Image (cartoon, rainbow, N blue to C red):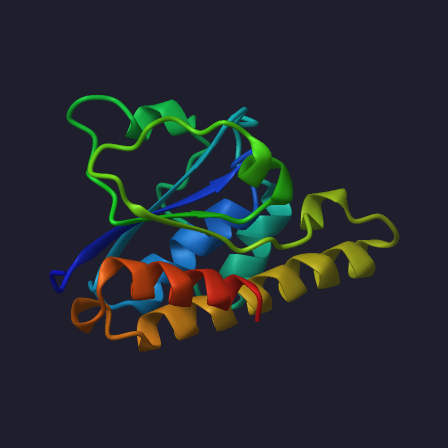
Length: 163
């Protein structure tokens, strides 16, 4: 494979987990990845707590938006090398056929937007989600993707989701 990769993170609402993964992959990869996110039924806005936690930890949130996954299955859309679902519901849905037949994996993460309790407990749920995704993105970045064949790469990316 090549040295630069496009990755699409999918979630149903595209308001928290997939957005966080997009930010992390873009900003931690130092140009090795161009990350995108989308949802099957996007909420239309990014969760304010997701934005707050990203900003508190030093990540830029400029230009983020909640968008439908169909946007990335259209002619002229960037061709994806990896498509990773981050919520169980999106993993079970029938996804579009992605141009280029990217490697796919599931990295299920509990939905912090479903957290209940005090403001502190909800904030903690978003922070924990960010930490889990950050750990998985670091593991992805540690892979020497260009040295792996497709089946090995798919196996390793899926294994990250089980960590």
